[in-house]
Image (tube, rainbow, N blue to C red; front, side):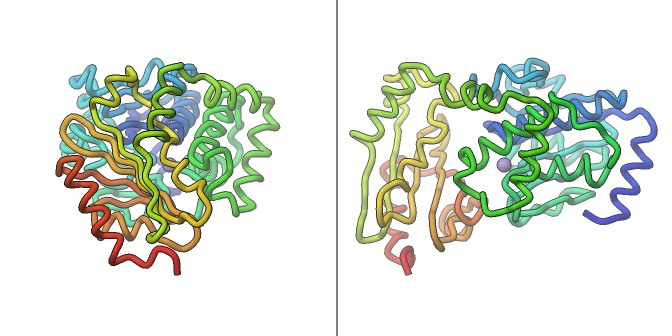
Length: 336
Ligand SMILES: [Mn+2]
């Protein structure tokens, strides 16, 4: 982030502003945590803040303080677009391209407020006014910590509520510090968060030990009947059809983390998880070692993300998508 941008924001925020915080479609713990932390801080500085999400978010995040005030565009599209239209400042967190916010895409592009990107995905789109885009961090929540307490307001107080939000973001985006966990600074920040007195153990319980029975049955079905291993390509994949989801009374967030199981097998470096949605197949890619799934997702699926975690949409049928996926593997050197 440029020095002049920080100075500009400091100056601008001296007056009371209308702030919209925008997060991506199917928001995860990092998006929600980062947005709530920003909102908590700006609200404490007397700004008028609204968090806008394109659609609803999983049950295991509903307990978070302020989560009930998030405006969900699929439920109230008028207020969602109005908040974006009338905002002086629009913070876009945990995504970097307009196609990640579903129906709010045009509202963002047409908005006259200053658009500030805070994000850790590669290759941000050229639609923002201010960029704080760093890929070598665990999560957007880590960037929010740096933004608030190291750049914008070095005397700001790290409250327990903000610490709780950022802790959720870092933990969920790193699969409890299993991924993106080689940076010393991530642990330093976590130490500071825990020092505020948050109950980290209880937060982990709320996130990871709070599933429904049907979600566990769906996982069982996935691993037994929908999981394929292609040893020749060091690849595995899981797919779920609409029928599967209905059979196990799928609720949003239920498949969170399923993709990671594909990588837990020895000598498997690449895994994909395909879920049939109403109008598309949502695909998640994960890798270990050197295989770059961001590059892969961009090249073959018009998607993107990070080196070891990326996503994309396919507009073919499930059968066609899987067939295409397998055909691409022949061209890729997954295990060098
Ligand atoms: Mn993230």
